[in-house]
Amino acid sequence: MSPLDDLNGATDADLEPTPAVPAYDPLFSDWGEPPAAEAAQIDDIFAWAPAAMPAEADEYEFTRYSPSAAPTAPFPDRFQPEYEERLTELQRRLRAETVVLPKERQWGVTIRELAETLILAALIFLAVRASFQNFRVEGASMEPSLQDGEYLIVNKLTYAELDMSSFNWLPFFDAGDKDVHHLWNDPNRGDVIVFRAPTSPNRDFIKRVIGLPGDTVEIDSTSGTVTVNGAQLQEPYIQGRTACTQSAKPTCTWNVPPAGSAAAHDTCGSDECYFVMGDNRQNSSDSRGGWLVPRENIIGKTLITYWNEGSPNIGLAPNHTITSANDEPVTGSDGQ
Image 1: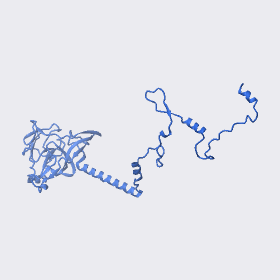
Image 2: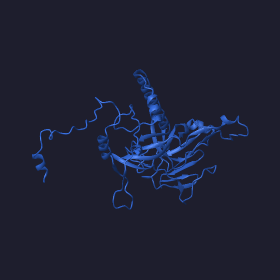
Image 3: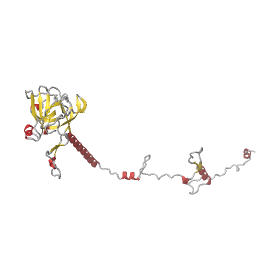
Image 4: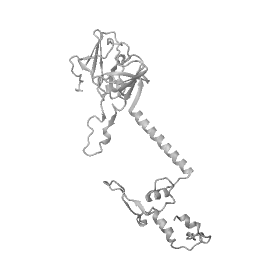
């Protein structure tokens, strides 16, 4: 007999529903343990939790969930913005203790830093200006070594001098016979120098040093040869024939006074005088005109050329070591 046959013979009293167990309501019931049926449902939800899969396992292994074993989340930081890296205690203290200057003081700091930058830039500019200076070649007196309009840089420290007599107070120190010493080099034969022209102090000339203090320079206009202290010079850098511009004689001679002599002061007004000529011997105003270059008028020695014919052209300055026709160095009366 099916369950439907039992229903056909049942009365209304038999069909009344069985009262259900009231659900646990925390708003209207006392707090306590939930009913057994509801607790069973909660246990069924969290009954199983997958454990970490072993390295060589083919299936997950399930273990009973234990609320006490669940990791506890750290207490939320109410000072930490959402989705931002958490700050360490040291970082939080540094941020909290940062001093913010008022706008008035910020402007003061900015002006002070700007003034310091300008002063430093001015000092660097003056230091560089005192060491190096650029010049522009005007005229053709140094062709073919230097062209008209060519730019070059002059080293002003090459012939820098130091008076050693100021250190005579030191024990066991002797400046020697010559108190003034050059820090790097003395002007040598073959150096291309820039100097203030003795005949026109407001103009700067550029020429090549031929004769040093104490030298004897002789020019043979017939052959165009130049002789220093009896040694004929090799001059592959010149253009044209060397002649005596201020004399009708075929041969002319200049005696450069020794350094520190009375003749040096009478001739050029300095302790040291130098005989110079341009490389373009037929188009140059130089010491053949009867004047010598005082040591104090020398600005510096040419270092590099960097601009020619409207475009960059970097190269070494045309300084040469002057040798004799026998390819031997030319020496002065003192062996220098």
